[in-house]
Image 1 (tube, rainbow, N blue to C red):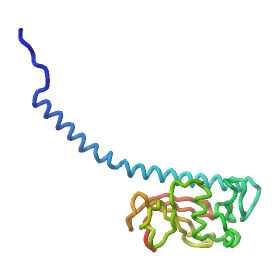
Image 2 (cartoon, rainbow, N blue to C red; image 1 turned 180 degrees about the horizontal axis):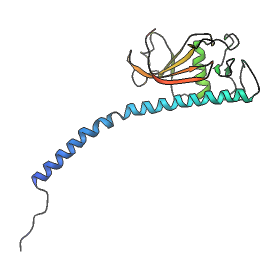
Image 3 (cartoon, one colour; image 1 turned 180 degrees about the vertical axis):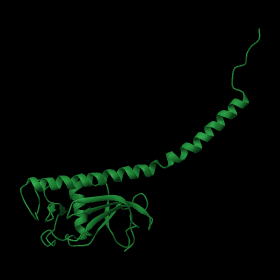
Image 4 (tube, rainbow, N blue to C red; image 1 turned 120 degrees about the horizontal axis):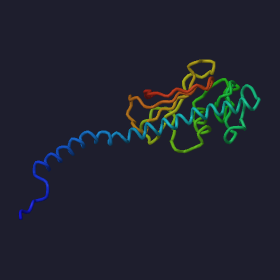
Length: 190
């Protein structure tokens, strides 16, 4: 009786190794890019939460029956976030805001912290040394008077790439209208 040998031939093994090699070349870049995908998903979620919180704050202002600039709107969060004259979040200590009609840089950080109430991201104001630190988000503002359509807070997420001149995820928040814009924006050195 003849015994049949069981196992793989050399050609079969070579073919399997080649197929595995091809799969590794195709799949490796997808796994390598998962870190960037995680950064993108994380900050998009935070920016989405910010946008929702702005809408909730304005709804609170509307249902409170109040109008105009309000200090310490009690129906939202811990009640320490002041409103603009149009009822959108403006900051915590807005005594220098000309009765809710003017945006200043520190207000942007206060808005972020007052709306999201978390310490998941570290914020740093925009300045010459912003790329040197371990901060996640760089914030500041453009404009000043809320009557200008170019007055907004901006929040640039730099935790995934701290290089100067690259486009990072950016949130712009307009406290006169409550509008938020999310996209890629370049953060330059002041």
